[in-house]
Image (cartoon, rainbow, N blue to C red; front, side):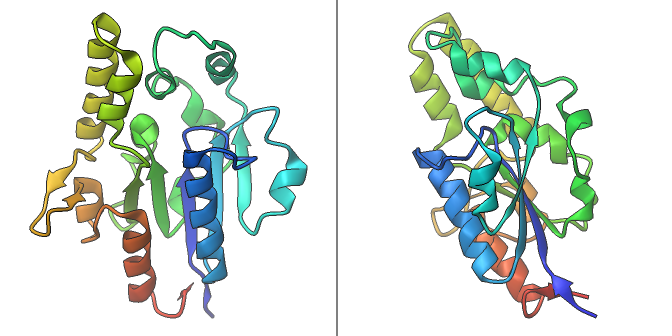
Length: 206
């Protein structure tokens, strides 16, 4: 008996309401996959604006992780380090996950902050990396010159490299990453997931 392909997206920030570029990208991708018959689950940090009523209107399932330290980065407008670096330090976050990532057929990681959550997944589960920006460049530019830029930039670069997501040039001039290459997929989330769906048959798993 077949069942829908199950995909989990790990978001680095609250996604609802989808009012900014990165949030819109994550939500629209999830909506499109749901239309294809994929069972999509998104895991995102908790925020008071991410109300249950908003999630109930969506075709995907949303789980919020009540990780209190992340709330500080939203309230600190003039925070010394960029959000992308701050949330990459999340001791205990894995223990608060309400689901097991290993129970899904495909895992998509948005941005490098949470690459540590997928390092122990079985090789049989494809991991797709996606980011709206080149995160090392983005974080470095957000930090400005000086000490903060060096620290934040090196942190994000290390996460990309240690997590196996350091961009590597390919023949076509695009980029791929080792986590995607383990499943012979390009680095583009839509292209990668489409390939997994094609290999899986009519959007289903037995």
